[in-house]
Every structure is written in structure tokens, then in C-alpha cells.
Amino acid sequence: MTLLPRGQTAVADLLAKGVVIPNPGSLDVDDDVDIDRISGDGVVLHPGTRLRGAKTVISAGCVLGAETPVTVENCQLGGGVHLKGGYVANSTFLDGANLGLGAHVREGCILEEEASGAHCVGLKQTILFPFVTLGSLINFCDCLLSGGTSRSDHSEVGSSYIHFNFTPDGDKTTASLFGDVPRGVMLDQPPIFLGGQGGAVGPVHTGFGTIVGAGSILRGDVDEDGLLVLEGVHRDLRRPAAKASYRALRRVLEHNVDYLASLVALDAWYRAARRPFFDAVDLGPLVLQGALDALAAGRAERIKRLLAMIAKVPADGDPGRAQLVAAASDLPGLFDPSDAVAPVSLVASLSDAAASGLAYVDAVRALEPSVKADGTAWLTGIVSALRARSAALAPDLGLFG
Image (cartoon, rainbow, N blue to C red; front, side, top):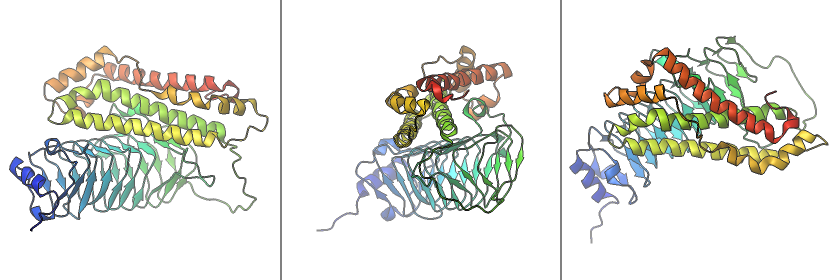
């Protein structure tokens, strides 16, 4: 008896749809992949491509495995996405996003329009706004990077950059914001540059237009916009290591609340401002759901890590710390999707643009300044409200005071 290679019925169906498969015998398609979620318009699946997961979506014009074999597992790909080789799972890639060979993208990532990375880029729980460009040999997990206005004016992370996201105490309450959501979504802010052979010790925040010189290790915030930063280890230090002291507890909590609030704001932006553009294209609603799922996974991850840290925080007679520990169970409910109503002017402008066939990026850049200001104020209000609610759980800590 001759056994057909696994997935060959699915391969035949894909070929019938018009998918280009240069070597059909090399394609591996799991039984749970829904062929109806794969476009037949301009999709190319090169030899060694592996498709897994019932949530996998591949939109028109996607090209997979052009440089080396690639595995795509439960990912949602918008139009024209190029994944040249590696492994990507439980993440969403919007129109024109692309990664080179050796990519390793794990759960909770969103690469927005034309965001890109060269070879050997590692991402997890990472959000890249449109046009963001990553060099090679990068580990950039647990962070959000915005800034930039076009492919020629984009935020960039230099080769061999690391976002340090794990502490000696075993915590991952280290997510970093490079730029922010309320201004970043408007695609009119100066780009951020993180120089190669450098890193950032999370959690940190930088303003727009920040330039961090090559080889610098960023250990503190850069809250002002437009600053040049050169940092490193400037002195020798040897002293007894203090385990689980959490001397910077307030700062860590504030950064985690800001990150969570930013994910809630971005979720609101996707639901109200982006939705018409997804609805206008084939498979778009499925890609939108993938992005919303990634944002929900990001909130769950950050809350999980925050609660794990709080459980280890010593009270030491500090009433604020005692309040924090007592209120920990109330934290998850604070960061559900926001019910703050989006400005009518913003929704109307973007809905009309989507109906006319204008691409999302072009539509946002064409918004009137007053409409952008309304949108930024709406998202800022979401972040501010969540800050206030979080601070009220442990008033003696003086969060955001």
C-alpha cells in the first residue's frame, strides 16, 4: 500500500486555489489547518514550508520560506507578508511585514504594516508599529516600539541589540515602552533609534526621537523627546547582592501599569479605528481577531508576571506594600478592554477612508490635525484612567504621584 505524504490532500486543494507551490511534495500541512483561511491570490509557499494550527490565516500576496524553511503555527498574516525562514507562532503580521531567515517569533507578537527584521531576530510578546525596522541577531522580547512616519523615516533597532527582560530574582515585570500608544498610532512622531551592540534593562521608557548610541546599555528612562543618550557601565562595583529587596518597587509598578494601560488603549484603537480597514479585505476580520487575541495574551502575560512579583514583595512594615499585596487579586479586572467611546470625528474619518479603498497607513497620515488630537486625547484618557484606578488600590505607595 502506498501512503501519501501528510497533508497532500490539502496541498492539492491549495494548488487548485492558485497558491504557487514550487515543490508540492515538500509542503507539510497539519490536518487542523483550514484551507479556507488561505488565500489563493499571489500566495507563494516555498519548499520546506510547514503550516500548523486551526487559527492560521494567510492573506493575498504572502510569500513564505524564500530563504530557508519556515514554520507558521496559528499565526494571522495580512496582505503581502514575507516570512523568509524560521519559526513563527501565535502572532499577527499586518500588511507588508517581513522577517529574514532564522526568525523566532513566539506568542503575543504583532508586527504592524511594513515592520521588518533582518536575519536571526527573536521576538515574544513584542509589538512593532508600522515601519519599525530591526537589524540582525536581535533579542527584543516584552516591549512595544513605536515612532516614525514612513519606510524612509522609521524607528530602528541596531544589530546585536538585546532587551534584557529577566531579573536576578526571576521576575519578568520588565516590559518596556519605546514611545507610546496615544501619540504613536498617529504615525507622525519622530523615530526612535536604539544603536547596535547595545541593550535596555527593562522596564524602561523612552520618548519619541530618542537616539541611544551604539554600545549603550540603557538602564533608566528617557522621558523627554529628542534626546541623544550614551550610557554604559561607568564604574566597578562589588557589594553583597540583595535578593528580593524591591527597592525600586514603585518604579516597576508604574511601568507595568503603563504597559498594561497601553495594551488596553491599543486594543481600543484596533476595535474602533482599525476595524473598517480589516473589514474591507478578504480574510481581514480573521486577521483583526488574531491581533485582538495577541493583545489579550499580552495583558494576561503582564498580569501574570506582575502578580508573581507582588507575591514575593516583603511588606517590611510598609503600609503601601501591605495594601499592594492585599489588593493584588483586584488587579486583573482593571485591564479588561476599555468601554471609552472613540471620538466621532476619528471613527467617521477612518470609516470613510476605508470605504473609499484608502490603505490604513495612508488614511491615518491624512487625518486632520484636530482629528488626530481628538484621537490622542481619547487614548491618553484610557491610560490615565487606568493609572488612577491602579494607584487607588494601594494609595500609600503614592503611584504616579
